[in-house]
Amino acid sequence: MKRLKYLMLMITSLLLLLTLSACGSKPLSSQNVLENDKQSKTITWGVKADTKLLGLIDVKDGKEKGFEIDLATALTKKMIGKDAKAKFVTVTSQSRIPLLKNGNIDAIIATMTITPERQKTINFSNSYFDAGQSLLVKDDSSVKKVEDLNNKTIIGVVGSNSVENVKKFAPKAQVLQLPDYAQALTALKSGQGDALTTDNVILAGMAVNNPGYKLQGKAFTTEPYGIGINKGQDDFRKAVNKALKEVQQDGTYNKLIVKWFGDVPGFNYKEVLRK
Ligand code: GLU
Image 1 (cartoon, rainbow, N blue to C red):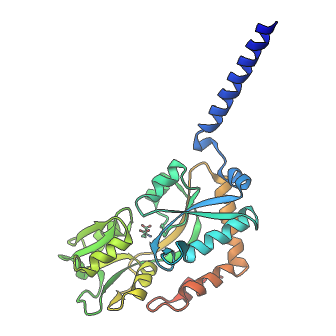
Image 2 (cartoon, protein in one colour):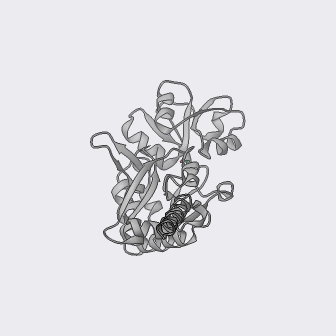
Image 3 (tube, rainbow, N blue to C red):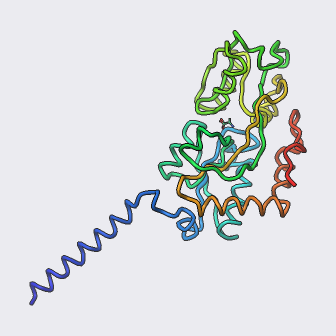
């Protein structure tokens, strides 16, 4: 009798252990990210840390600041409740998709353009910002437009589509790719290239802090930013789109545009306001 009891106990513990380990290793594709986030009252967003005005870690207090940070916070509250928390993990243009696919973050809100190439591996929300690719040059630069960069060196960031786009407009340019925007700007300032290329709004943020440098020429592409979400997470995607619509309708969106871009030389915030 005692032995039977012991055996039963062993079997129950084994079953419990098996169930627990099965839960822990549940593949991402079979999990419902929105449900998990509702339980933990937290959404983990991948954000930029070196992109002033959009996503920047402020060295003074170590906190993330920018339009995308505020927007992610507002969306979190709309999606899972007023007491919910937005958690931020730093990503770069190169690391953002792998981190999403690994499940380190629930979504990407990091200056990422919706492109057909990226749509092969991840899904996107509706567009939440309209940027366009441009150039940052020294005030006295002879480069007036992107075509002037043929036979010159242009600086960009690995994993951004800007480095691909620019080759179409200046096929004879040399493209020097750095790991992130902080390093790309340092390279421009130390004379390693004739211009830095990425989206106008990112370059405008750099120009604010770097007298002697300016945005040059009109935007030569359109870059609609989307929130990156894993394939199979349609509940999450629908909730993001619903929340995006709400922040646009209740005025939060335009308030954030004015807060972050209302007074930035070289950037017309009125063009990105939404009705
Ligand atoms: N929007 C462009 C992209 O998605 C450039 C900005 C970035 O590197 O994040 O690649």
